[in-house]
Image 1 (tube, rainbow, N blue to C red):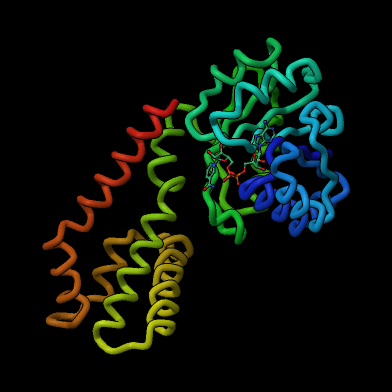
Image 2: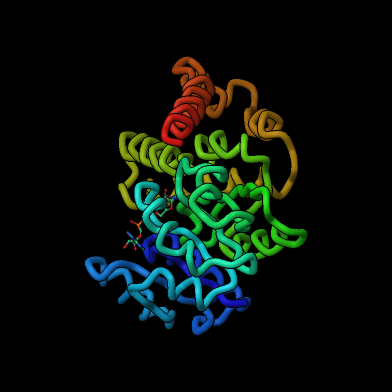
Length: 266
Ligand code: NAD
């Protein structure tokens, strides 16, 4: 299978690296494009062994699956450039925030096979979480193809398109919330006397470990929380402070606000 990326920035490179590291696709079967003004993105791709071009239509000609990995504002221009080169044999996978399947399909030839993905930045360390929705002209097997490709950079799941905005509010935007949580925990550690670099590492490993426990034990997080709180112990004292500040309500508000923002962008 030949893979093309229109747009050669952070997300395209993360996905390309995941594909190569998984051993599923070799670098010489991947091509990426970027305008001349953004040559440095293509230099980074060349360093990974990818083929590169300034011509978006060339990516289509040389690929079976084409990722649209440009900023949302560039999607319609890019779609009009690639439309003449597209056939029903191509699968177009858009990762552009807020651009609907119907919107992309309307810019491409009728019956173009289009998939909409909401990835997230931990894809760069192969710990991403992506959800994808299938377009109206997709064939049997397209969902499996997309799942196989995306799972090289983390968890990937098919959802109805109506869930893509909520996914954007949760896992798409969530890494930034969790970076703030890590920073806050580390600041707390520093306040009570830990060196900064140690506090940051402990905070990050704590989030990583808690997430792994949820995923690997399958136990509900409320139960796991109860399990670490001994009567009158330090965890329940800390938890009381978090609940006084409305931790869960604030997280729910954050997901809702980001979801609404994503809906408004589309
Ligand atoms: P980026 O700025 O790192 O990369 C964008 C790329 O598009 C660059 O290589 C740029 O040269 C290229 N480009 C610009 N105009 C072009 C054109 N006319 N033709 C071809 N290429 C062109 O952006 P990114 O962070 O990789 O984001 C790419 C897409 O992924 C966006 O639509 C964004 O909404 C989506 N996304 C990003 C994240 C994230 O966390 N970074 C998460 C989810 C979705």
